[in-house]
Image 1 (cartoon, rainbow, N blue to C red):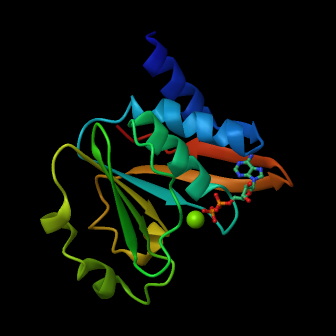
Image 2: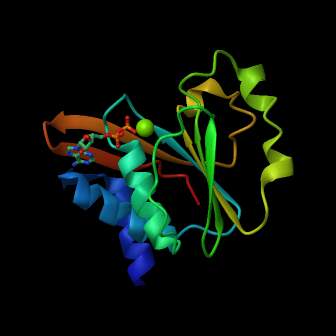
Length: 151
Ligand SMILES: Nc1ncnc2c1ncn2[C@@H]1O[C@H](COP(=O)(O)OP(=O)(O)O)[C@@H](O)[C@H]1O
Ligand SMILES: [Mg+2]
């Protein structure tokens, strides 16, 4: 098994991280495993480490600008070896509002679209997404699992 395949296998089993650096490291490692033009859906409650994971992903894409949660806007755009669009749909009220963003016009291949609160979108829109699930296991522990059919 290649290093990447072994890593993905481990992530499909679920990885318990102790501390935000470990979560960032996991995100950084995943960056190399994702094909170009991938949607990554990050499921999980507030504080479970989704934004932390995306900051590691950004490092893995050669992005040096610090990743912060989109606040005034719904998404932030970063340029690295690929374009990273970090979309946080938390404050969107309904799916049609999300789909009105015209993201297709924004994305420049090769891109990676990382979506927090993907439940705000219709399932159709995200049918090709790689899905990650984040859960709280303790003050500094988070369980991070990749859905098995993501490829
Ligand atoms: N193992 C861990 N992984 C990620 N974050 C952790 C971990 N342990 C503690 N934390 C803390 O939990 C918070 C996670 O915040 P954030 O990444 O913004 O979550 P979300 O985007 O899911 O709301 C941060 O304050 C971070 O320092
Ligand atoms: Mg967040």
